[in-house]
Image (tube, rainbow, N blue to C red; front, side, top):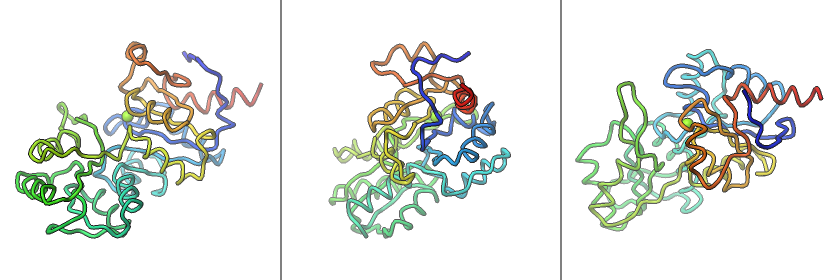
Length: 271
Ligand SMILES: [Mg+2]
């Protein structure tokens, strides 16, 4: 069942950064072993963050989403590309102003970071996914960038899964502004290692003591690797053993799902 390509003792790790979609749930369905994994994190007093590139939800909404699946994860354990974007802007230009296209998750994060909204002469145009996207907001954003505002994307995902197919995500939504202005956006979410470094700071963890857990080689594993963390690829989501072979890098360990983590940790303790 398990392929321990590299010996890792999870008992020795202090912090865990876990992707959500394909790791914790698929749509509204919780994946096997997740409850045991969360219980283990709590019992062993591990530091942990649940991470998503989706900028639309606030930590409170994510807390409620997991509560509907029977999981109790306090708000402070969620980390989104919206929070990463807000942290980035706060560090780069404290108190700056932004014109933002996105949902509550993004807008709340920007306000909480002390930034102000400005649709006349903002320092930045920030784009996330959401229903406020329209030709009007695109036109507005395009002209603000032409006038000198810097262009920021919450994440560089091109699409995301929905019930009956896929929906264009942030990278695809910001493309018209890039094309019209000739300016390239800067993206703050995964696979930008910046998101992992900020996450590590939130966990008060050094990278060597931390593990990135995800289901995608091209975002989760690469960003964990490039920030110096150990990496776990779980096969409960997008990447498979076959796709794994096509990358020049590999995760520290490949597991069927996060339920294997407490099982391996307990087995290592009993040795
Ligand atoms: Mg995922």
